[in-house]
Image 1 (tube, protein in one colour):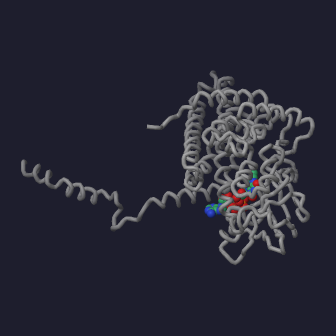
Image 2 (cartoon, rainbow, N blue to C red):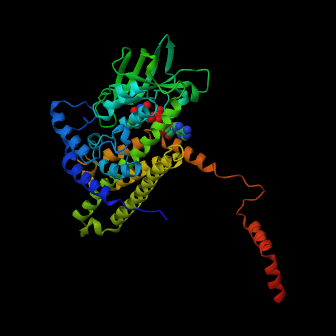
Length: 433
Ligand SMILES: Cc1cc2nc3c(=O)[nH]c(=O)nc-3n(C[C@H](O)[C@H](O)[C@H](O)COP(=O)(O)OP(=O)(O)OC[C@H]3O[C@@H](n4cnc5c(N)ncnc54)[C@H](O)[C@@H]3O)c2cc1C
């Protein structure tokens, strides 16, 4: 019976190394180079960060989400989950380990659907960590429902001409290229009429109108671009995959991206639990330390219970992806992880913030960032509500309506059926009375 919760000792050694390496060498980067993890390296940062990346490569932990043919280790999603929960503690960590979103998802679809030329031009530098990419799908008027997208790509001779607006194209301002989803055939269903294009960011006709910031960032100095594509010309071979394949490609990309966010969220929530426990043991009020108060014990117990359920479920889902190698088959469970993730992070970060009193609400502690991160997790890669719809639809597929007037579990019906099943014995019993 194969049902095992142990990490093999060899890999556990690597995780132990990663744990210490992230704590000692990588987390400090978050404080000296905040918000610069998606900015191409200048000389100063290169001097610090290149040797760290080299160390990760030497340990065999570079780009572990990828198979060996793409420069990764082929460890699979379960091992990646165990690593990602360590990396989730730091914003710089996934860059130093070569597995940062959105580049991982973008690399995955180029690996899957790209031509050899596209792979050489875009994939290799992405895998080497020398280039950033941006995924340009959401539009200002529509996000959760991609069938409403209007950006058009029209064939003109041997070129495609792209026109439209895209919103929340993360990291576009520092990316070398964009993956743009556009309508190529408005006369068929949107599911078959949209295509993906690989578009260099410096193509004439591309203008970033705003760099939308998240809460707390300076206005127009964020990293989520509102982009105007105006008569942007790309050659025929900029098409990624076949014409009309955008939806299929998007699903391939988002499945992996969602579960990777969930893996990193475990690390962030664990950090909040650690801070909560430290505070509970350190702060004294009303005659005892916080850890002795039952409310506080409740916060700690609830937080651990939420986190451990979430963690086990994410690890299980990662295991399923490795087992079936088919995101479609695991879609329901990926959606469950996506739906649960914001609540788990929000609740735990909120309790940890509360236990830190006024200090917890300041910009000298990370709690509000985590709570805001939880809100973002409820939207990025699709809103919670839409994922709940997916879960329900997938579940309902395994059920059928009842044949008769009453539910299958209607107790009078069950009694009649049970009596009929054992009639012979029941009559005998009655006869013996
Ligand atoms: C930090 C961040 C980074 C992002 N990065 C990228 C990126 O790199 N590239 C990219 O293309 N996009 C990106 N996005 C955009 C993201 O994919 C969209 O925000 C998401 O798909 C929702 O679209 P919307 O914001 O237009 O919301 P809408 O589609 O307007 O939905 C708004 C709300 O309506 C409700 N709702 C919507 N549909 C349903 C439904 N079917 N049933 C019930 N309720 C519903 C939900 O409450 C939802 O939150 C990013 C978003 C965030 C927050």
